[in-house]
Amino acid sequence: MANSLMVGSALMGVDYTITSPRELWPQEKLVKKCRSIAEDTGATITIGDDPAEDVRGADAIYTDVWASMGEEAEFAERVELLQPYQVNMEMIENTENPDVIFLHCLPAYHNRDTENGERIYQEYGLEEMEVTDRVFESKYSRVFDQAENRMHTIKAVMVATLT
Image (cartoon, rainbow, N blue to C red; front, side, top):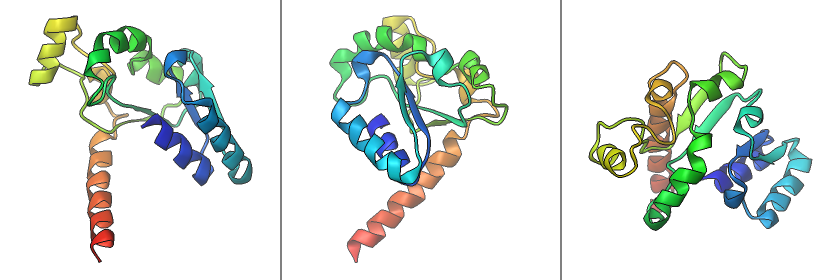
């Protein structure tokens, strides 16, 4: 997800910052390519590992699950690595932007209301993972608007490829 957002941001002239542990940074070859594209579009591509500083001035914070399908074996390692990067109210406040929005491509593990959420709690003691329930359910969250837009985009791509 982060790689796709970086490429799209470079192409569209959008300033992009990723904050994550260095072990999960995008490949340098891709970062260089995106920075090259950004020179023509006016975008900036920034990679950092200090979430408190990296989010300053952000208009949007976007996160994804800590371990995607096929990465389940790395789950325990990812949980330990990514806990300092959890999207919580402190991170929202660190943006210093009262109009910041929160995005997530779903599913989100923000509480124990699902089987997976409860399993994660039982195995790792986490009631919330990549985002807190307080942020997920807040005025900053545009998660369901995003999901609706994604659905319509997918339908449009299907129609375009069927003809």
